[in-house]
Length: 312
Image (tube, rainbow, N blue to C red; front, top):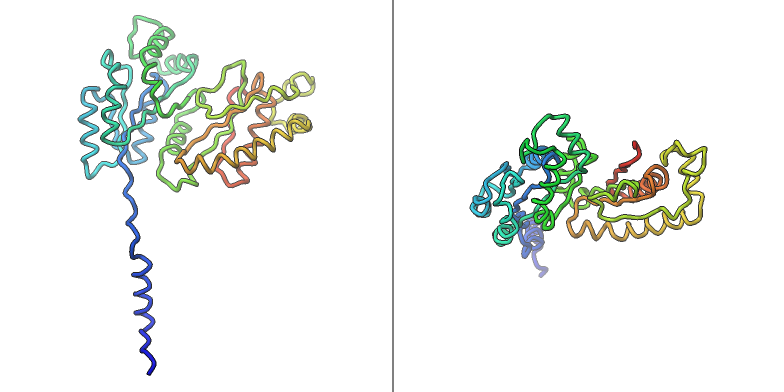
């Protein structure tokens, strides 16, 4: 006598239970506290609004003495998973205690320090446009206040987990940057690669994760036809690309980036700045940033090309 075969619906139910048996439920996202700090005028208020849009519980300028208590409340709360708090030079003398406090609250929940910075000339321009006084007072010039503030914040800058240079960001670009770095979307989709061109004579970008020096390539500046043009011009780009060392460099850097990017994704990095520098930031570095950016874009990565010094 043949054994009775269970109905198809029963077989599907048994199969479904077998497939799910032993599987653990999806892990709940870990609690997180963002300490948002940095130079006055670098955009902390705008950044805090971006964190609020991401669902963070946001607090501006909480007294430093209350920070451990606040972290404890976030850690125990059933409603708040992520919080962001601004702590800056307005804290005054107590600011020296922040690195020590960070060590203690780091035992309660994941804590990250995000430091916003900008070039001094940009900061002075912003204060001039908004006509707001510097937090350190009106007794000194803005230039002098910025220098003093940098000295006060230096110990905090040294322990920062993330440094964001907002010199070339408007409010909307800063918001996009924060969203790209801290949104909890699929890891492979949220990695944003910025290919940045710059001129060494104007300084290395503060927020560059990797820097490639392309000054070894022939300089179009010395070709009269190209002097007033940039690397965005097809003829300039073709000139730079025409050298064998250029093509080999492009291929080597592309292979390196395609090797590194999946590892950055695996580690949870959401924003990567790859900087290419030449002398003035007008020709060679611009062409390189555009070319590498296009190659990575074709490989499926989210890429934007930025040119810091092209308008100088």
